Length: 333
Image (cartoon, rainbow, N blue to C red):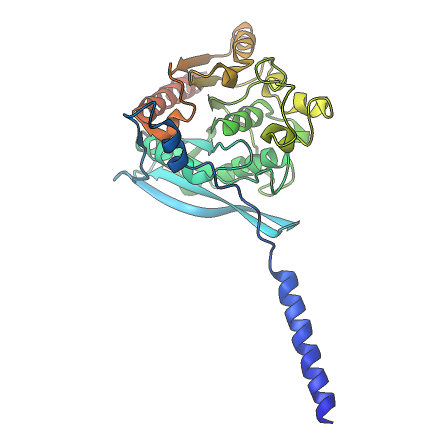
């Protein structure tokens, strides 16, 4: 009899252990190489005057961090919450909103990288929203686009709560985030790019785009380096080389989605030409359609200028001036 009860106990413990093991999500692999600290080390010798921009909340701003904007069910890593940070003026009102997408080559980076710039813009009267999205170790293209579209829908769903004008929602992105911002904003109303990741019933339309050194065209000669290795971030993220997946390389290139109904775009560039491949062509197309564009350039060989003083303040001013110019014009129509 004792053996019988011992077997029942052991069986119960095994079932309990197995159930808990099944419920525990698998750890998502992360590339932690793209940080402000590492970028600072990279550029300090050539630019001894640089200082990392600080996470410092202005007095007139309130913050809400790590808000879950959607939960992805049954991913290979379990149920997966995606988060965002909101920085908004304390004074009640209806403010334009800016969705902010971090860089990191689609495989690294974190939304915290956008916080110093987000705080500066919020202090100027913009509700800024720094979003988390799935990197390539977790999910390849177009998952990140679906994530960000869901974050835009969340923003409209929560517009009243955070003092947002739902008709004035812009998106910005840095480096790989710039490509994602452009692709998100230039695919307004394109059903295949929406995904199904929550916050349905609200539009994901974008009214203005800011691209900080992000890819415009994967197919442009300066961008399309056919000597890339299989370990290259773009090849991994897009699921194959240009030779293997030419239709995907084209689909992920924002320039091919631009049309006469596209929204205004601001480009802020570093002195590295390869990050602007295809930009001149896109600007020319926008001018032909009568759509407003601006281009500003820091003539420095420093890609991640938005992370550092003295360039972060000028970057914030370019973005703020552009957005209020664009939204003022839209309000007068």
